[in-house]
Length: 282
Image (cartoon, rainbow, N blue to C red):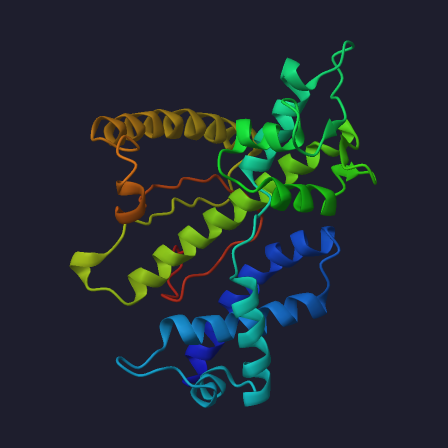
């Protein structure tokens, strides 16, 4: 690999990893766990994006592509296959179920506190609660996930209890992490797409950057930018909705996922462009 290109890739990876590692460290996600995840992701990407047409990916080829040993590829591939088996992820659905438990009179006692619920059978059971607020989601899978997160407990008689209202903010933290991961993944996916696309297939991606802005103007820029961005989002939402977005459930499986992301940023550090001109940044 060309030394200049490798240097640029190293800087890119470091700039992406710094904020990611800051989040991971705050939540006690260790270096060894990240290393294992990186190894696994290398194998996933090798199988998903670097197949030879009409040929099955082999362990040996994946090892060559990733730089891992064949034994490591076999181990990680088996882990990936196991992790892809159907299972519930803690999500908006789980939050809806807990919120229903906290607010729906069918699941509250006389003091308006969440009741202990029989697992199933009764009208006001945990299974009934999940059916009401999560549709076809398996109540046993949801119970396992909520129990793992310390949000519910279950006694030997099969009665399920909401452990503590204080645990509920965990949902908000998990949702913020989910949104962060989706936004970063989408932005990076667009950038990678544009690297390998012709001019007539470039996806819109722009960034406005000024340096040396004093505090009051920066604060006003944030406010004005947020206001105008929200107005744009409302316009685009009306455009997609008027075009039939979300109206036909069949299109959710076959149609495209599209969107436009806008974000505000600030910081003291300037990022020099590879163009090496005096005014080029990020």
